[in-house]
Image 1 (cartoon, helix red, strand yellow):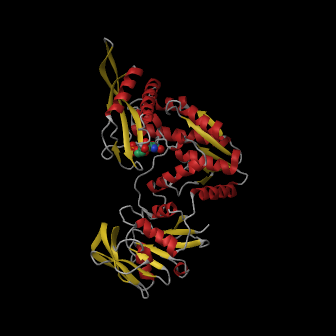
Image 2: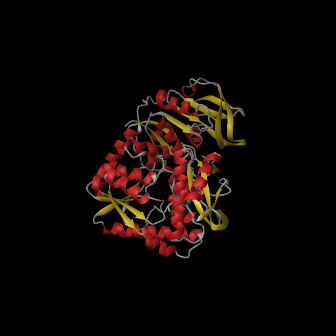
Image 3: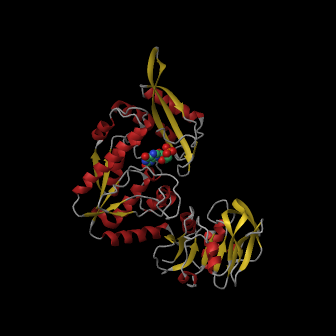
Length: 507
Ligand code: XMP
């Protein structure tokens, strides 16, 4: 399959570059600059940005094989400076470091900038600048500060830009990538995720052959898509394990079983470990201790089950690209943003080979793959659900009674959002059971029950979030249904805090 290879020099945006190109209909994948990789079927190469200075001692390099390959090259930011340095240009420090939106003036006609205006805004993030372009190259644009923002040698098809076309703030960024892929690399825009699905199924088949594999299914989008994709490749040799820790939503166990066992035909085993988890959580009120207990026991239950499987050699994981970047495992040089806390995660010492078929995809791509594989919309467009489940939505001690109350309240809230068309408009919604008891009145009687908080947020990947501006009528409907149908609740409040300063979950 013809492709554009993105060589990663450590920018946060490298995978996004590959995604933008795939969104154009051209297959693209990322390799690390110091990996061994083949140039077979590579019709274009992009050198990503990165945190280094080309003159630092450990500055990542590029091999002459690539520079002399005659394959069109586009260097971005660090990639541009690397081209300049390697081919005899000069790179220096500037006093006018440019960050953020910067005006660019096109000074020479370029295939990269065809079909749009001579002035545009681009997203910059650099300290070093190219002060002299290599022999045979011409400068094609300058920033308002007169800094070289692009240069090229159209005969050798080597192009370089200082700004980031993959970032939304760059006007015409997508056009630049398209001009590179289509006009410079001569690629067709006919690739779709259907090709990805076919390629992955083939790869999984070749890797696992007649051996067995196991997956922890959580019912969330990522593990569901990974399971179905792998099932297409190896059929019943995939064993899916669904750990019911008792902290799931109302009817969740039945829904997951009926979707995956009855509808998809997965070889699925549900482990009912509710009592085990509740026993371990008895008397525990500290949020971090709750998470730790659940995480450890989840892994233990899963391992016990995995050990029962003879000649199982592979562990399938639904890791997607945002998980990789959050735990900074992607490029060796990408800085850590946040530790991921996924209890569906990895038994690290388990002796199985890990297969992560979705690890280069973004959430929207994972959903599209799920659609191609025929997964129902209710699974694909589900709100995220945390590994520790309702345990971190019951503030204080977890009891069976409290779980029962919260499951009912949560279900009413979610159903109300679905009925009113708000479920898919918000990124995540749920209820939190607080330990606060307040006075109410039911009929003519005094009542004394729990306070529940409803929470709904708008977000992209959960790193930051705004509280959702759900109409009062919808909140009103949810509130009156909750107090009518769940007698233990006397008060309903709506959480209007964004992240930061709050987090999305309460614990
Ligand atoms: P916070 O509360 O950190 O949540 O703002 C951000 C997103 O992550 C989810 N979340 C978790 N997901 N295991 C998970 O798999 C966890 O331990 C966990 N804690 C929070 C949360 O639901 C939200 O979508």
